[in-house]
Image (cartoon, rainbow, N blue to C red):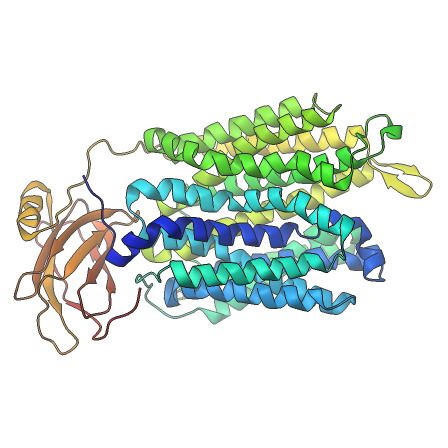
Length: 579
């Protein structure tokens, strides 16, 4: 049976759309990982103290956390491709600012702007949901979701090579160039989604969430410098609790909130987001531990004495394996569902960290650990957006996936702070230099294993949904629509497709999309513009209409589950909107 999308031109372009969106995700990951090889040299390069130099990394983290849910909501309202290009453009500007400076403050400004690119991941997932047929959506979202790991894995050795043999500013020129290429490919290949959420942008909600996140993440990332029991750290945590609490109360009273907390509180969404934090923790531990272990001198008795480039190459399989798990995920998920795939991924991560405790004495052993962890993290990361997409209405995809990506970011932030504290507390002082110990590395792996165990418990409590064995009826003509209406239990939507001047539009394609983003029916309007579509169940739907000479329309509608049809007229825009 053939599957169609809400947009004929999108269906034709989708072969190149997915790789381009995944490339945009990889570019974002490269930006994030860019400075990892030169972290220890930043104080010298910027002529500042080590505590000030950490702001170069902290600023990117904070702006990314703030931008991710906001850009997702803006994408739902005003166009996901438009916001994707905007995110990448802000990143390019930030990279160029950083490329032309050796001073701390301009560098922090540049890195803050680069953090805005983090919104590209949920926007890319939202575009895929809007455009792709159901049979391609799983593997496409898996590839987009794992692009963060892929980009990070590839960027580590490349950035190390540049840092060793060229001016470190070349890292930013390269990042800017990749960003420009991603923007150009997106504009050329990726059509804009016709789906729009109703309502306006919740500016007070955006400001409240931004303030709350900054107050929460700041003490997490700087707590080891300030002291975890210092008045500053504890005061900021208390302020974050107050601000986020007030923000939540405000969001519940707003007609069009930035984050629909009622949707977020649903068991499936809440547990998926909590599991995302645990996956984020487990992902970042290996990125912090293995490069340090590989580069420590052999004179320590446990260091592997590898160069910066070799260390990057040994950790690179982490990202590459994540990329190759995307098609595996699609097959597993199609057969068993994303919940089962998440559980399998978490079990593989647990095996990777458990085995890694005894595989720390040779470079090849770190590669084995990287491959195992990459496979598990790839499966887990790929499952998360599918679970979210299956639990929220189509009009909230961007914002919901933005929040999910934020949860992963919080996981990596917590991981960075906790593992940094563990390694610092267990380090040996050698001539005034803190040298990490094997005990510290093993404790870090045990913490990651604990996070995975918590993630597994959360995953087991997710609702179990096996993929449907019976294909949903799809109607591609009036006769098929009549057959569908006769076979479905509930009457659905009916009405007329009209032009801007009120005249009927014949042979307009009307597609019904359910709350999981799946096509639940399709038909062509009659000569008098009339159409009728059955629904499989009560709940929210999107009616997408398209006709030659008119712009596409996406109209949100809800069916109460009664046996009489709901009347919905669809008024198409008068001018053609280029795809």
